[in-house]
Length: 110
Image 1 (cartoon, helix red, strand yellow):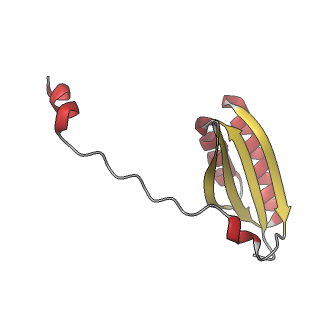
Image 2 (image 1 turned 60 degrees about the vertical axis):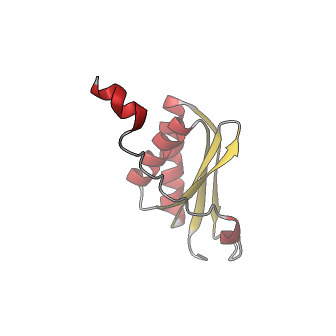
């Protein structure tokens, strides 16, 4: 990842982060690495790509997230050290689908 950049968008609240991440991915040729919860409603999205694309994506993401919530911090690291990926967030498993049936299905039928 020596020729790429790392971009971080930290927001207060998941809705703002989702809005900001959507804008980042649509505005520039970047790839989402993942996201992480820091606690107390603080969440951070991580993207990578070439330096100019990551800067453009972070700017667009911060603007979009700021319209619906609170942006805490943004940062771009150009050419991060080769050992830095060791602290990137681990890939999250998709949530399991809720079982069909049970009490909620009975209530919905009525």
